[in-house]
Image (cartoon, rainbow, N blue to C red; front, side, top):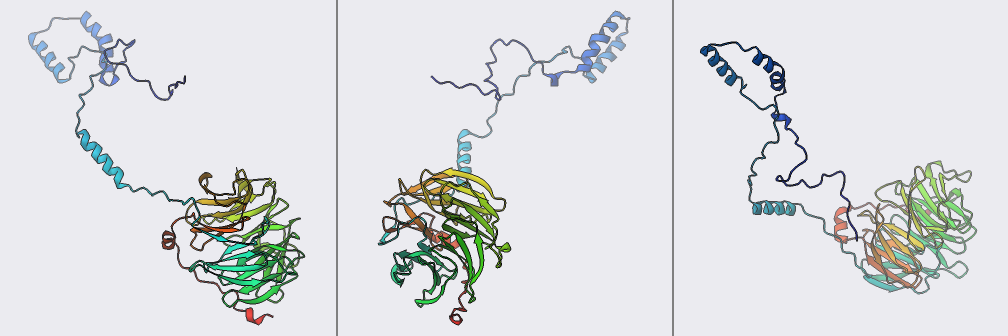
Length: 447
């Protein structure tokens, strides 16, 4: 049997007025303490010193007492009778007015999140490798996916698929893909340590970046005209694609493969994650071309490989990171101070992270055992939805330009599309058109 203890901050229910109470509490507002004091002290003296008075004198005293309100016999006044309650407004009108008031405040409708993918495509020969980055969605609404040694492009506007390039066996397989900000040019990292730059509109290769790495290039990140590459050799290289000698800066801090790279929206900070369980934050303003750049923060809280990285779109210094199978946590960082703001145990390997551009939400993709996508409310980190369908770990995530649709690619060799982040029509109203950048106007001059 359970019972509830009364809250000591609130009084218990008052007993009925007919019950015998154990004490009287005077109503001080109805008392005249000065008059009471006079009657107790001076009144006795007057009675003891009574002298005969004339009728006219008595009449004068009575008139004076009435005028000054001295004809009182009570010294202490107790509880006044409460006024009779008057119902000024009938109950039915009160209820009607209340309901009208509530109806006048429109509530935001709860967003419907489909529990199944809206489209599923085959992705044969997709490498089941946690450390690679084989999926990216460009600003021109074209999705790039690397399947073995071939890069395919899927145009979301009409659903057409085309082959961009198939690399030779001695160069492949493809280990990373990343669109340039203009949505037309794309970088392709290869197993032989090289990086190719392609023009998707003309299907032409522009150049090959060599010498930056000794092993495969599994991670890429653009920052305007700077292409940052991360390799299995632990090196991070900034390549200025406008000049012939493209290697302009290097970052040294990882001892194993760099599997996660993300520039902040401002382009001032770079986050890198590695198979050495380390997360580094780098400051672009202190990068040096003469010697390896020193990291701004070295974060060692993860206990497994850090591949999943996502900068918050509504707070510039907030970074989310995810750990591999031995860690299973999503952590949030203040990249100005290096402080860990929160850590959430997801229960499974964190493969990728994406922020919702329109709401305060975070999407994570996972490995064993459910191979699910999980939508979290930020900052409470309450699960809003869990999306299942993949039968193997969901290694890669990419977000459409409008921010509403998410593509996921898994080791089960399928590519699925989820309408998880809202209505594209509503997102189109909020977003303003952005001017496309043209970082490759120089491309034909470099050979």
